[in-house]
Every structure is written in structure tokens, then in C-alpha cells.
Length: 233
Image (cartoon, rainbow, N blue to C red; front, side, top):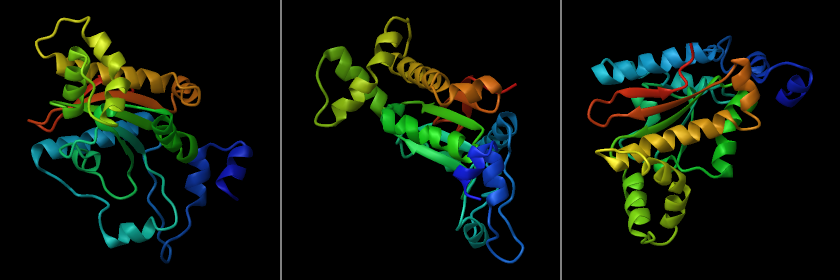
């Protein structure tokens, strides 16, 4: 049965994907993923703790895992993060092949295609957790902050990022902060997390408790993920 047919038959995307995983080699199948927001959250935060403490496991990064995933996937988390080279979600959560859907944009700026990409995991694969991940000393945020404050457009297509970040700039400038760019980065995370929670496709899953959308912030110094909002109970 196809995924679409299974969903039309009243089964959830997670159930459809889990039962339709083909065997990759012999009797081996892709191991089940954390099926609830809390289980997915706990696994990712355990991975981040390993990253911080340098006790990495480097899971799911071998030819066997690659072979198991060759015909299907069922990631348990979706992460929307910045393009910054120092903030790779697969590394900072100590995950591997098939564990995460990852979308990246400058300053975690969004457009319809990015929102659609985030929604793909929960809607099609039953992914129970979405994390919007901002970070310390974000170059895109700093550039946009300065451009908007000085009313000097960034060159070329970079101005599109500044405009996408304008709501975060305007909201953060109404607050008193010793580090305005940092405040803007955190505000952007919260705005996008709220936008995703209110998305017409994702909101029903959030209301039912089958999906959690978390706002988070990464420290370049410590490697630690700080949860800003949305952690599942």
C-alpha cells in the first residue's frame, strides 16, 4: 500500500511509514524512531549533552545504516537552522543518517517554500518534533540589524534576508537589550516557532499533542542548546 493510500485509509503518516519500510538487506529493517514529541526531544537533547561533554557516539553513520535507508526514511526530528558553518544540526545533536530533516537559511529567515519544507516531515513522515534553532553571534542577523537600523540595503539578494528579518528587528528594538543583535536573533526564533505552531497544516497536530515545535538557541562557546519555548511536557 502506498503512503498516500494508507493515509487516505485513516492511518497516520507515522503508522503508514513504519509499516511500509522495506527490508534493506536480509531480515534487517530501519530501527523504529521516537514516535512522540517528548521521546524525540529527549533523544536530541541527550545528543546535545554528548556534544557539550565530548562524549560523542556518532550514531547511524556507517555503511550498514546507509544501506538500511536506501529505500525509505523516517526522521524523528526536523530542524530549521541558520546557514552558519559552526551550527550543523547533525553534529550539535550527535545524530546520523536518517535521523533529521534539516532546513537552513540565513538568520532562520523563512518563505513559503521553507515553511513547506519544514511541514514535509510532520505531514508525510509523521515526524513528531520541529526545532527552530537560532544561535549566538549570527552574521546574517547582525548584517540585517545594521542594514535596517541605518536604512542602507544589503547588496543584491542579501537584502531579501534583511526584509524577511524585519519583523524580528522591529520587535526587538522595542525592548531594552545590552546586545540588540542577540535579542533580535532570539526574537526571530520565537516569531518563526509561533508561525509554525499556527500554520494551518501543523496547528492541528500541535493541538493534538502529536507534534511539538520548539524554539531554541545555540551557544557557540559552550555548544549547548538553550530551549526558549515549546519543550514537550
